[in-house]
Image (cartoon, rainbow over all chains, first blue to last red; front, side, top):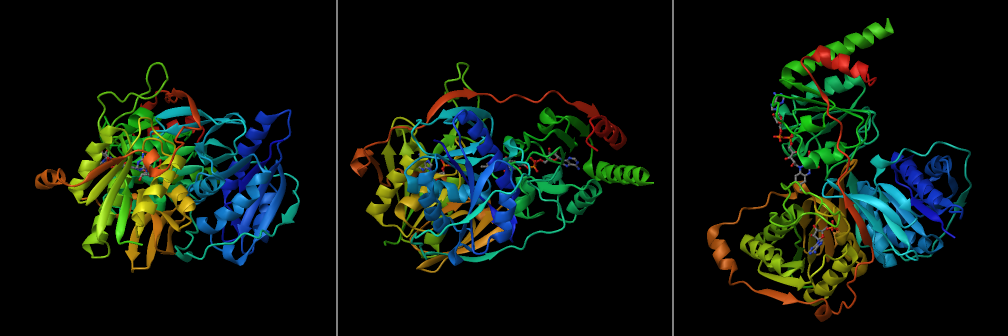
Length: 327
Length: 251
Ligand SMILES: Cc1cc2nc3c(=O)[nH]c(=O)nc-3n(C[C@H](O)[C@H](O)[C@H](O)COP(=O)(O)OP(=O)(O)OC[C@H]3O[C@@H](n4cnc5c(N)ncnc54)[C@H](O)[C@@H]3O)c2cc1C
Ligand SMILES: Nc1ncnc2c1ncn2[C@@H]1O[C@H](COP(=O)(O)O)[C@@H](O)[C@H]1O
């Protein structure tokens, strides 16, 4: 019988939305296993995980949540977590984590401990052992097949799956694993959680800026438009490299892969490495003063113009529209 | 533990090439296409060179797994400043787990202080090899590094993560994978290209490293081009843009 384990991602007592997307992928694998049953468990590692296990237990399709509390699990260190997940793996045919920096760091270490390869960025389930994934900055899609007897370890491309809906709570089971853990890797610090603004990875709307913004001061223009729209802020690599915005705003092949309803690219040329990150956006808007910029090849709505002129106008129009909707 | 650093170099299609699927779906077009060192691996090599320049390492060994053509990229690595290079010659591309096993065998030969790899190869976008090597070697990993400080027995690494930055401390030896903002690789100058011709470049087989089984386990059944987006509309002003957004129901 098949059984699927999802490794939960969480921080600050909150379940990361990537986990609900992994559960959706697990549901798709379970459906491909039918008529055989393929129950789905979620493993939550941490020092104190009660709020997180409760959130995981509320995800539709989950059979049970495994709570693996241990002081050493306080930070998500791959070297510490991987041997524990590998110890759980024999009960499962599939072990999934999200294709976020958390899962990309952890899951290959799990796979190697299990002596198997990993399917990275799983984007579609074709059979329980055949999956579609992107390569070459998503310019090419491949179908890969694993031997039917092999345990599947994969990271799930979160932009390809909707979050699993809420359902009645699944049981939570505490587990104690007698696994020796290494002391060679120590957590030192993490930048504070950026509160207040919508999260780039899950926001319905994103406003992104490129090199053309030319300074971090000018990015204020973009933040104001984002606020008017209730949008998250993103950026191209060039804008991050130049120090206009922090690294966690980078969208693209080597940054975040996102799937918002609306993506507005301001002064971004549209290099393939950037486009990789926005392929699944429903509506792409591009504002660029170069009519031949490649971003226009993927934009649903294009405006050739100077962003320093257009963006303040756009912000005014959107604020005015909101004000009239409220009156 | 010696004072050497192993740097993994992969030969990939250059990042500026628009990669195309062969008409029969059996792979991607590589004939006449520009090949380069994976950009993240150049960053890894640059970091190793800087560590040596600070007097914290003695020898930089560039290692690659691939066909004979990879010698070109290894010569470039030598011209950048690596002291020697090792090519594990294989005809077919190998899976990350097998690459990790081959790298482990090289690690056991050279007992390095550090192994530096790119965070991802921009061809297969796997993001696996460094983590797998660290697991097989049973040593620390610090992936997606944007800052690296060494003090002889430990490394302090700043990592680019989805939530911002994270700092880890790891005991050496360790595996570190590089992110884009760790450094800016130097350009290679002509005299160095000449000098690099005399630096040692050894070729080994997987069997010589004691790795007997290199066969692929995953089968790629099909390569295809993703669907392209439908052609969009052009608008002439901010007001027209708002109207177009309203029409699409996204405001
Ligand atoms: C290995 C690798 C990985 C990479 N990963 C990523 C990634 O994850 N994400 C990413 O974004 N990039 C990535 N890149 C970089 C990518 O190739 C491009 O260099 C980058 O996306 C360019 O950023 P940009 O569009 O902001 O800058 P540019 O290409 O310089 O474009 C600026 C644009 O602004 C326009 N412009 C200028 N002034 C104005 C104005 N006043 N009003 C309107 N428009 C204006 C110009 O016409 C131009 O099109 C990667 C590159 C490599 C090699
Ligand atoms: N064939 C190879 N030869 C040498 N190094 C490799 C090879 N494949 C992968 N690597 C290293 O592993 C890193 C990550 O690759 P990947 O896991 O394939 O995304 C690359 O940036 C290289 O440093």
